[in-house]
Length: 198
Ligand code: VGL
Ligand code: ZN
Image 1: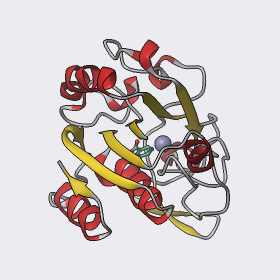
Image 2: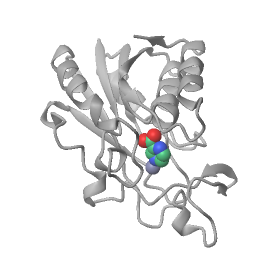
Image 3: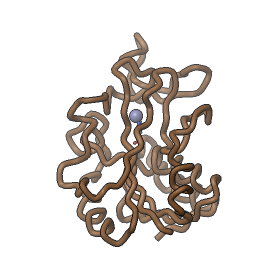
């Protein structure tokens, strides 16, 4: 069975949001058109506590977008974003969210970030998504969302490693591009790992 996987289509990643992804809002009509074509639609939601260690604001003297460290792992220090129960963490307006069958939240542990929808960045804990998808009989994922160079990429790599066939629907993905080639490199890396770019 095929499922559509929506990555982090949340207000803080849309233009005007705390961690805006350029053109992030352009994917919404495309995603809305795709959803009815899938028997199962699953979404991730970045869902951080206010004291999350990925926020530069929680590292005194450090600036946003600098490289830092968190619990022994390299960590990009982000603006405060997608704080639990705030407007920035809500699905973007215009997204046909009633069509989402199941949401997996991630990034709740303040000591580790979780770009992937399947595991945290240290592969220490599972979100349960991979197991749940397999229980539903899902073998094939089409992935859309933001950010191509972070949460989309790591979700795709983890899904491939878990044995799912993965298509990345690139017209419905947008990236941060902290460095100019990040999105291109991320797409290449996903393809090399076995994803199909469509
Ligand atoms: C994301 C950075 C921090 C993403 C989430 O959705 O790609 N990026 N948290
Ligand atoms: Zn985050």
